[in-house]
Length: 299
Image 1 (cartoon, one colour):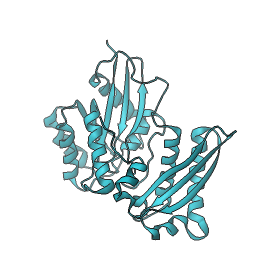
Image 2 (cartoon, rainbow, N blue to C red):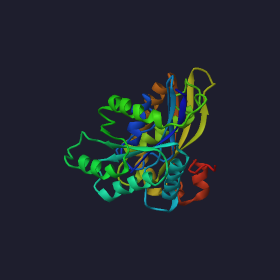
Image 3 (tube, rainbow, N blue to C red):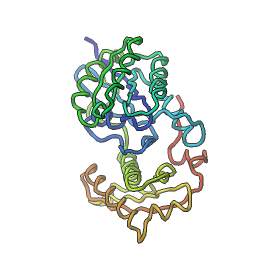
Image 4 (cartoon, rainbow, N blue to C red):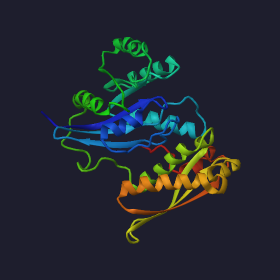
């Protein structure tokens, strides 16, 4: 049997569990995860390499309706992942309140002209009838339909998914990337995402959605301590004191949480310097968005 290798796009709504699924599939934390929608802003690649195949899973931003500013980037990024993938996985979360939105994901993926399958996710939640309703909707497409909980039963879901994805991958001469890799994200990029994750976890209301993280300095070669200087950008000046908190307590908590996880990631002691700056309306400024990496790569 010939070797197979290709890109597998995880497509779903914001907060559908794509990032949790990505991490369960790869067996490492390559995508940040929070309870807030639009946590994933850029595609994240996670690699699984086996003797018979290599699957490069692509965690795409959730499909959004808005077409302005940052939301335009998220829309274009998700649809570019669909266009560039060899295989698609429709991630359908049963806790979505609007069934029409789930139908839209099914329609988008089915019309892409790619081999695909569906995963009904979050079945540990008490939505008794929704899984069967989704299975009935998917009957006409004659594609594999799996169901499970990426959060609570990731290993079982991983085995089921890989078994069905392998034959859908295109033939290849061998792995597309080094078999030792589990992600193509750099350590610098992963650190920036960890900081943003901790901001999302420690902040509430609308603040996280107007927040971005910019790495100012990343020094791996200055002795045993990794030195990381980062700027947390907010879109409104009145959000800056919220991120800092009274006597700096919120920013300190973000820093402690981020430093601990970065130390776990790198296996090194970390010096982390966090600053907060206001960049009014950055998510509607094309130049600022490009500077922060929010630009769809050209084919």
